[in-house]
Image 1 (cartoon, rainbow, N blue to C red):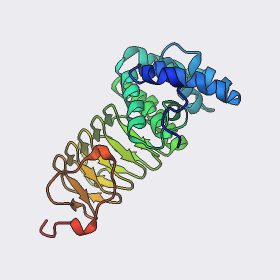
Image 2: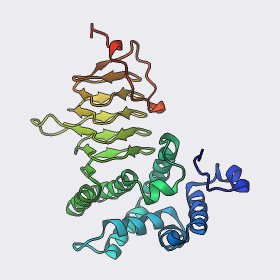
Image 3: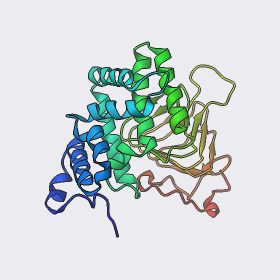
Image 4: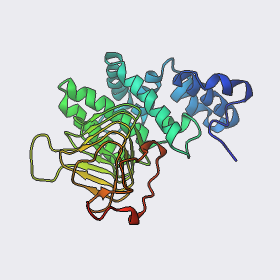
Length: 280
């Protein structure tokens, strides 16, 4: 059975594990270029020709996002400006890549999120759009929001605040509203909406804690808090606050499984309906 990072050869696996993300990504790119020569040009242009992760991200995301409205060179300059102005953007990208490798059983190397996972790419573009928003460059921030929605089917308002170590798994159909906050080490799967109720103005979107799992198709609506370590079942509609380490599921969502003892880090989305507490 193929395992994660199988491409890393013998002597490197023990050394590569504690190595910085960028060093490990470069090693994987070089190994893949040798194994698959048809991708050598892509791997060289996207990764191996750069000195730092933020340089590679600036180049590769610019290639993805470019179009008739703005060319790759213009976009790359904007991204480079953002990364140079705020070093936390590159650190967040490193943590996001590590989160994908750690939590997604289909991910075998850092190459996959960097080159192929639209959730990772959408999130890194949002981070730059959020930086632009904070710089007062609203129109340009909205431009990148629009491009991400068009290319990746991920719609995140540039004002939304997202922590690091975040994984968007598959990512198709994710919608995150303007005043939403997402904590560190959270996992959000495809079809998730962090939205308002459609009536109020101002602070109207969910506040997601650290280490939360928001499962496939879940809708979390309104200015409510989802506690640290909580789990939200697939297809649930959450209208009320969720305590730390609690598991909720259903329409509307209710606590599942008795005491609040869910473990979001195990990515388990299977909750037994019979475990609903009918008194809740």
